[in-house]
Length: 171
Image (tube, rainbow, N blue to C red):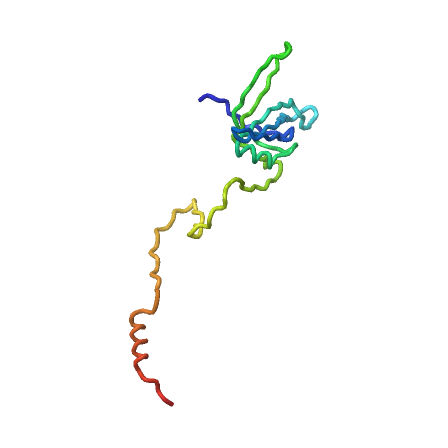
C-alpha cells in the first residue's frame, strides 16, 4: 500500500481532545512544527515558518496520549500523512493530518518517566532472569553442572548404621 509516512518533531499546540465512540477511543491535538535556521547576518538562530498538523491517535495510543501530553510538550510523532483540501464559500482551504502510529516525548529537550498501562500484572517468572549476553565476546562452551547431593553418601550412611548398632559406652 502506498502511503506517505512521516516523522515530525514539534510542540503540542492544543490540549488533546478525547472521545470514545463505539468504534474505540480516539484523540486529536494540534502539533506546531517550526523550522529553525542559523542567520549568518544576525549571527543568531531564527525561527522560520510554522506548520500546523492535526494529529489523530486511536485505541490505546489515544488513551496514553491523553494521559501523557500537555500544551507545549516537545514530541515526536510518526504516522501517515493525509492532506485534505476543501472549498468553503469560494475559499480553498488545506489541512494536513497525521494518523499517528507512535507518539513520544522528545528526549533531546527534556526527560520523561515511562509507565506501562493497559496490561494486567504478569506472574513472576519461574526461573531467575538470565544476564544479558556479552555481544563483544563469544560465549564459552557450556559447562556440566555439578550433581546436587540430596543426602549423605552411601559410605556415610553405612557408618551411621554401624553407630546405631553399637551400644553406648557407660562411664
